[in-house]
Image (cartoon, rainbow, N blue to C red; front, side, top):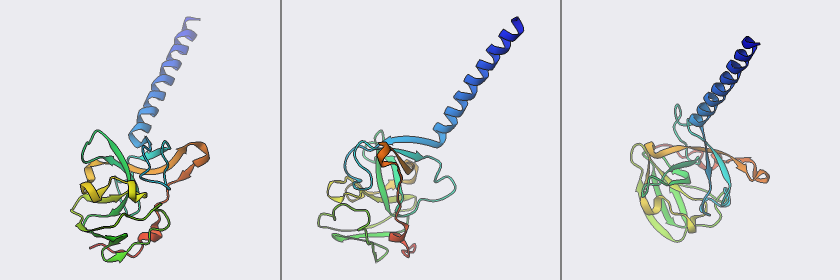
Length: 184
């Protein structure tokens, strides 16, 4: 009787330890993020919950079109979510309502909800930094206003909307939109 009781206690302890280990391993790889604001509409809507792959860029560099979560450069205790438009070495030009990367006009109709407010500026993306824009340009606080996102401030790649259930979807990176833009 005593032996079976100690065996049961041991089993329970093993299950608890294993459960905690699995939980912490998952937390190292995946994080959740609640969309706060309208800057990524129509791709992501206010109060949706998104899964972030925190190890996506461990062996592979981010690509144009990836939606990332990062520490906001003006307040690193706050996380933002935006789409990568420019990679290190790229020249990004906004000319009125058009976005150009390395002298190639980007056709963004597939994912932006409204064109840019008239804006004109050129940025050269420094090494280990990214130029990001929200999909809802008129309301997005993004690289146009505060500059670049350092590589070390990237939390991970947004990969899946999991809440609400009726919006379950992989997050589209629109690879065809950015095809053929070579690196500078």
